Image (cartoon, rainbow, N blue to C red):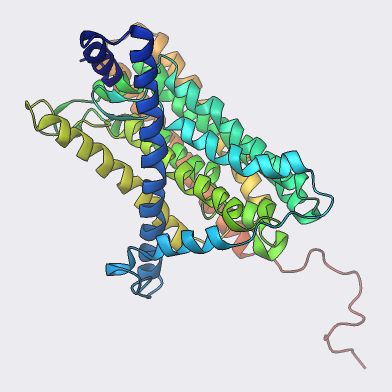
Length: 402
């Protein structure tokens, strides 16, 4: 099936439009669609987060502005637009004002390669997975620029924490995605979805590589700054993180990037592990395309709801726990998983045998990971509150012998 822009360009050229103008129109249509759809998705995500978190916490959530509180987010946007933008004294003007723009720009670029349905994808490039990984650095640089340009020590410390957290969790994230790429033999999201079209979803890679899927989900939480990895906004430590000195729409742009970033990771996870647009009836004429788009969105929102559930349930980790979890558990597990998979796929074995061995490796990784996390939790439970045991009890509440 031809891509959407190829169909549009063919129709324009057939109508007598010069080819270079047809190309410009197709590009403009794609950019406009992303620019309009992404903020609309963000409105839905903010409302969904508020309602789901409120139900988890036995509250009602927004219910006054519009039916079911659907217009509350729009009212908040109007409020933010009316707020004055304040520039800190002695701030780096270029870095301070460019950071929120880059944070949103980097996320919007990711929408160009995630698929909606067969043939409906911005650009199905042959390095789509690598494209997602590469553009993730734009958000990291934006946060670091915001911390440096704000001329605030708390914002600067939070900017350094960005580099430590996001760059660390990119390693297991990339390796978990590499597991799918190695098995599928392609980086195109369209081809990845096509290869998972077996009966009733039994060909989804989440059943073949559950360990890689779990690691991807955990790293997606960390990369999108979701709880329990939201140390970048630790208000008890760094007031409000790297965006403490921002106000008005510049402040809102960071949260727009955060919401859209989490949604994009859910979208990528649905395309790589849950079969993308695959589902019953996608090959039917006429209605098949609408069913495929519905399946894609249903799977994406299901993953995002799981992210919200984690956000409303689990407490925030300490920064040392977060970094230890990455470097002592996730990185060794993903390196071992990739090494095992490479050895298995090099062997001259039948395809079903290779699939079984890949599944065994993933189950083993999951077991080791859950055991390591459980052991760490038990050790934390018995840890004393004292940083060290004092040599003397003088000045304590202990009774002194006669």
